[in-house]
Length: 128
Image 1 (cartoon, rainbow, N blue to C red):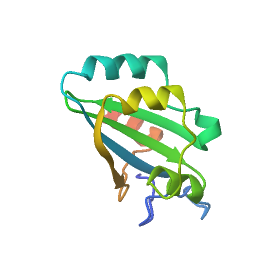
Image 2 (image 1 turned 30 degrees about the vertical axis):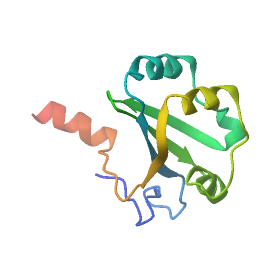
Image 3 (image 1 turned 180 degrees about the vertical axis):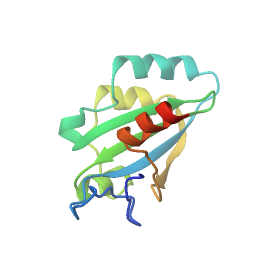
Image 4 (image 1 turned 30 degrees about the horizontal axis):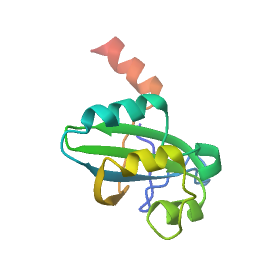
């Protein structure tokens, strides 16, 4: 059974109308030859303090040309800040990222999500 997701990309708990979190992808273009530095920065931790920024989760994907940050938030004001509506306080790690990124980040809003429930996955493994 897939978890329902509303049009805004917010998850709803099955059997409940409580909306939990919102996700957004922040896609940054890396300057040529800086993938190795991006990997180092990822290993050092997030570009800003998650709690201070109001972020409840973050995942980073890295290609030769891009770093893609998948960010999970609970409050709309945090989403505004991430999408350019409000400024972030400067920080050393954020400045290090700024040194290897070209142009402005692109923002992608979640429009869908599919997950199978653990019980369904276990059943498929036993039947298949």
